[in-house]
Image (cartoon, rainbow over all chains, first blue to last red; front, top):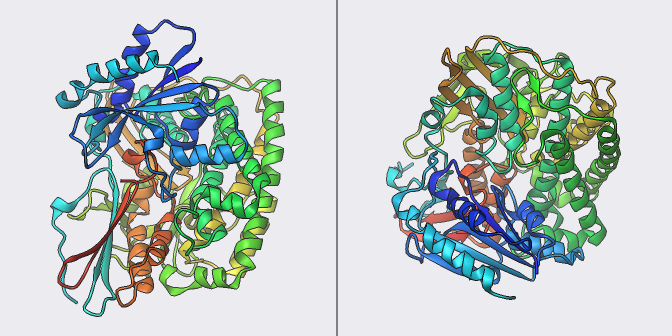
Length: 154
Length: 486
């Protein structure tokens, strides 16, 4: 089974980059030729391009949520996100990209896509390279959840 | 008219927000669009090595990395007082065409197009790329994916990585092209030219041959008579990578043409207390509130702004399409916001034709791709991002570190116009309290046409741009909230 662990975010936008802070730690700890650890600043179509061809994808990212506690770390199967219509002037959502690819007969979409989400009330719009204390404190938990997820079979 | 003040506390971070105020009759009194703006860039940049800026700024936006990369690189050319060899300029421009190819395809087929192809009043669940494919056919879907990927591949061959280009250096580029790469790019470009032609034909068949859509494009709520701005070459033809900034008026006549070095003489950035984003306007005309017409210094950039500000396209087929657009829509300038979509496809065709010229240029495999830099100073660089004019301005210390940095991004240049377009569409579409989803989509279409860029909301899962629409009655009571991707 081929797995990709992907940290998503922007490391120059402080807490927004938490996914990448986590994936860099994972990269130090994993030596397994069936596991690829990478990072990206992208979403939607480009994100799909990165996970295509793997059996399983674990995506670590900041997730904006009104209902969850700020800094809560959750394991969320991608299917739990609602499919939303394209209102984005920029890119489509990952779900839409997947749906589109399936329609086109794409067979290499990972069987399982799990999001390790670091829940945030607001994601900052301010430049900075370090995480806030609150979000820094979530990193060990996110690492643990990701490592656990790597042990799970599909 | 009753004055409405929006408490600055309602300024939102991280997502766009449209606030619509209705009067006693249920018609629109006013509407505001608030979009997030990244803050603290100047402080963040200060003290960094100048040559890191093309990499750092390409991370500002997950979609426009190439535009930021080259605006920064060009600012550094100026700051280090160096003119790159002509081969390096051509390599940069070729890479830039790759970026336009994928970006414009993405917008037309995935983002803006569904409103037309599927229909502006179709249910939201259908108004997306899946709906486009259902209507236009699976084969078209495959072509869309293929050519978007070609655009990215061209960018990646030249820039290292499509999403994080690393090739731009002050004085040139780090890597040239070999013959095999040229061959590969040439093959992809040929296919992209055909696809661009096909896309314009599709626009013809689906939009222009449908009277309902043409009427919609020409309808009052989508008109805006601002000034127009864009880069032009020495023949006043549209140029994406370099040239002078030209501004034309409501009659289509040139009122300004300047080198970017002089931008502060011509552009002023206005601060409004209800928005983090600044609203630039033309200094010589002045600020006249959120109004259009000759007395208001607000201008538009992006595909329609560029086409309006120029005298034509520098390639044959695109120029023909340019003329056809203006003939069809009643001459220059075209003020219909929805015509941005048409202009975008004409630019797609230009990008493919220009890429063909560049990849076949005898200099393109030259290895003379960098000139030595001079002493550090001050530099300003400009490019046309897919969504409009983009300016980077750096002042360096004697040691080559950033002392001061200022950016004016495309969506900021368009901020005043986008705000008015949203307000006008709201006024025209919402009558007697009808705030159905179909009506609100007609409002959204006004702002989607600009392909605005919300830097900090680009990647966050689940993806998609978060947008909130709040509608208040005349007593300022919240009537309805619509949330998308929040």
